[in-house]
Amino acid sequence: MARVRFLPGLPGIARWRRGAGALALAAGVAGLGGIVSPAAHAEVAAADPIDASMRACLARADMSTTMGQVQCMDNARIGWKAAVDNAYQQLLAKLPPARRKLWEKSQSSWLASREAEKQLLAAVFATTQGSTYVLSEADMQLQPVRDRALVLRSALADASGPGPRRPRACNADARCEHATFDLNRYYRVLESKMPAQSRPTLVNAQRAWSAYLTASTPLVDERGRIDIIGARVATIKRLSETAGNH
Image 1 (tube, one colour):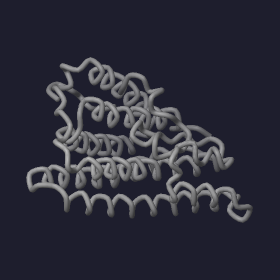
Image 2: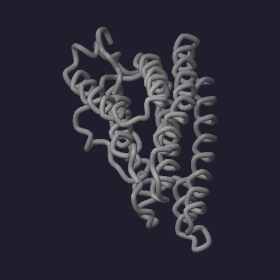
Image 3: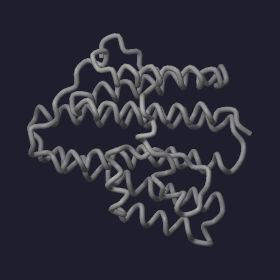
């Protein structure tokens, strides 16, 4: 990853669909813009019980308020966090020591990134007003946990294989370079919209995400790395379009 400045960027953002995995929107919640990574597409079609339960919750008349809809998404996030923990423990049990250590580093970096991201989301959405943004923040808390669970499930299914081919350095991969350019571009837009006192929160969140990317790169191929960066581009782009809205 030499010389790559992972502030935030990425080509073909259309590959990462928006719409809370098409789940919340299908239930009539407008204005959400979650990201479903390519690894997640098949799982959406498979109607995971956690997704099905969230759809049913969102459709209930007694959960039609903003707080009710948020509760539905929070319940789904808790369910997906349990799925993360379950898949992770099963994966570790199947891996040889060297590969297990790589996954432990990736997981600890992901957890640290999620903690930093909570602070960033709070800072960005504090600059907004309206129930739509309350729902959007809940969605942005949910989707990365869901995506991580799907990544771990996929790794568990492939645990007996040789593992993916390790990516080249980012500056030797045109897609990765393009992605990084986009990421930096949206990062600068978001930074310019953040209150001065909140900008360190953005810096900390991006550093934590960069550490997660670095820790995860040995576990994915080049497309997997693009998926990680692409999801980040979509997140930072969405936040840059959200900050300061009333």
